[in-house]
Length: 232
Length: 232
Image 1 (cartoon, rainbow over the protein chains, first blue to last red):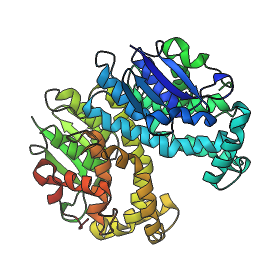
Image 2: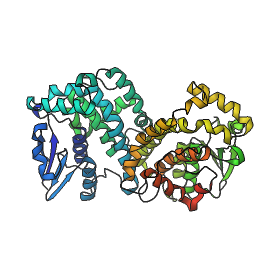
Image 3: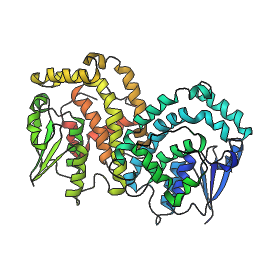
Image 4: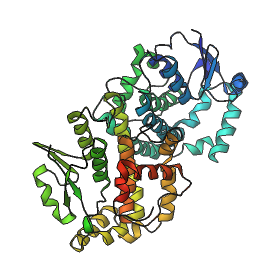
């Protein structure tokens, strides 16, 4: 097999895209991560993705097949590698996993951004900094510093917004039960993004989500924990 | 088998508890609804639930077994009736279903309340009205009329908050895939609550969630659609 994953990169190869993390964890779940070639893509390298017909990471290339979008990558991996542990749990549970991922996209990511986005220039290449600042300031309609100005309040909001995750973790170690599944990777991607770029503490130690994140950091022999990042 | 479901009731037996609907749809999913005896409980009848050790509907009694809380009822039904179609899809998908239900509880229900709560006195027994008004006004810290005063804005917020449901429905007919599962019943319960108590239109006709709600109303030979309610 010859799998390549195109993933976003900061300085020194630091991978901090939440969607990139979903794909990376999905590959690990399938037992394919160690043998995957990683193509690091900086913000100013996006032309490297042109072959995929779009310009967002992650992109997976498996032999002749090119798949972009972390959700489509998960679906592809379950289809192409049915004998490895299922990511999405089959037709009856795939929709709820999609709902969980969309909840992360629409509700958690904006809050994480409002905690850490001003720290991102510190961990990306000099050549990417102007593009990053300009594109994000345009998207939010304010400076990076203004976006994160109330991050202590944002953190409180994040705590409230994590309620559904916390409720599910009350009865089990992972959203996927006794082992993680795609919904775990979707939520975890948000935290690996934060951990990669900022020392801001997203969670209190007594939050059950904190303990879950520790368990997630230990997955795959501690692969995520070995990734460079700030103490959480 | 002798199953009894204790469910909240308004005037003329109208059942409008979102959690009651989760339990009712769960029983129907298991093929048990038609043979279930329903004990209607009005707000002022809550003493009828004392035997269960708490005072909230729904309560399920199956022979010697008493189960309260709609989530525990679903778990119980999957355990006690394993040969009927699964509600929660087994250990690997149960956590994500729990997360979906908790998202409904924490994010959708408050918005539905802010659209319809002032209409509830019209469909409950005269004896229940003072209790209802007083307890809800205390909970929200304002009058029922004030709670719903901006419901056109609340409806916009609901539309945004439903994004994860809509994203999942883009690729399939139900959150559960080709047939509904527990996550569908959890979201649907919020809409059956609204439909039972208020003529306020929660969804626009061009919203994919609207079409899904129509499909849900047709489940079990149209059982939910036959329930008295306002046009949606």
